[in-house]
Each structure stands twice: as structure tokens, then as C-alpha cells.
Image 1: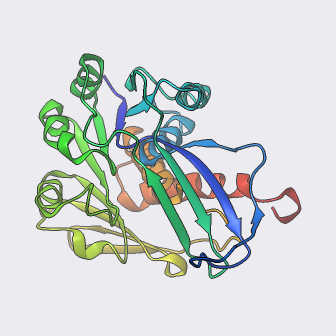
Image 2: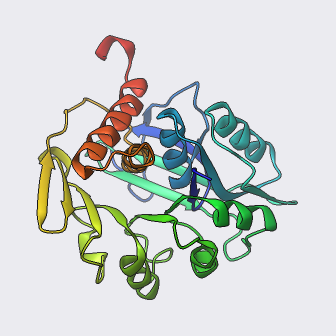
Length: 281
């Protein structure tokens, strides 16, 4: 079956803009937060799967939440975006993973993440079935102890994508080496490129460089696409959305990596524009 399975940590996100920097023993004022999306469904697989669904491709999220109100809201939000939630497992009697995304006055972002039940995640029968039947699988930051099981479920024909993050708990060296060798497409930013190990000759690497654009490497070819500069304060999920849009383009038989990249950038732009105040759009 042609669909994407995006795996990784789920997250209930609380996003704030700060008037200054977080400093110990000192109050820092919050000067902005979205009153509508408080909280909102987050986590890398969420953004990847939503972007693919919005681009017209079938997608499933494979992740874990608690059986609390936040977990129920998470699944409802994904379903409303057209994402399959059969692969969202619920852990009974547990709270859902939560993240506080604090955008500071120097434009850096402090991320405080509570995985809620680290090491307790397991692939259930339904999740294994979704992974086995998927034509496209995207691995994002998630429970490291499950990566071998996830890759074991992957069918030989399934195209594998890896969204790299500088999260050495989710991606210890051995797992990075394994994903580097198996992934058909790797997404990273310029500061994460050094974490990629030995790749196959035909591996595609999509590297974001901020205002310097995005480069897609395919064999000996390197293409850089400029990006539109937007006045935004909340870029959460931008890289994952780019990946989801890129994957959707490949699912729709877009053979040229640079064209798939343009589709991914269009998905990212849509995400960021939607967060901007109407007067600035």
C-alpha cells in the first residue's frame, strides 16, 4: 500500500515567546503565546505526517501518548488534519509527553521535553502492521530502544527517510551509523551534518542552512534553493514539515530531488505563514 508511516516521539507543545533570556534565579516575562493553540500537537512525526497529508498523501503517525485529556486531544488534532491515528498507542494510567518551547529574545529556542515514559514504549501489533505495509517510512527522534524493531518491520521495497536531530539520546553513535547506511534520504541542518556516518552513493541529503538556503545533494550533484525570509517568532516543526512535503512529492512520483525540495519548502512556508499575525502576512 502507498502510504507514509512517520515514527518518533509525540509531544504536547506549549510554545511561548520571551521578552528576554532564561537566567537562573531571575524572572523572564512571556510576551507572546498562541491562545488558540495552547497546547498543540507536536513532535517530529506529527509535523512530517501532517505535511504529507496536507500534500494529498496518505500518512500514519506511529508514536505514544498517555490516556489523559492531552493524549486524547493529540489524536483528535491529528485526525482532523487527515493523519491516520491507528498507530498512536496509548499507555494506560500515564500522562502524555510534553514540551515547552521557549523562544528567547536572542532568537534562540530553549526546549524542555518530558518524554513521560522513557524506555517503556513498545511496538504493538497494529503499529507493526502499519510499518510492515508502509511504502515509505520516516524515522524521527524517538525511543532509541525501538529503532531496531522499526527497521526490522520495514519491507524491502519501502523507501526510508531519516530526519536527523542533534539529540544524542535518541541517536547514539551506533544508531546514527545504521541509519546513515540504510536511509534513502536524510534531512539535517548545517550544524548536524557531522553526525551523518557512511552513506550509500545514491543517498540524498537535504541540508538546511538558514538564510543561506537549502542544499540537496544527490550523488555528485549539489543544488541550492533560496528560501523566502519571513518575520516569524515560532519556527517549531519547520524542518519536519519540509521533510513531510519532500516525502509527499516523492510519493507523488516527483523524481527530481530539487523539485521535491521545492514542494517541501512550500509546505514549510504554509506552516509558518499560518502562524503569522494577519497584519504581517
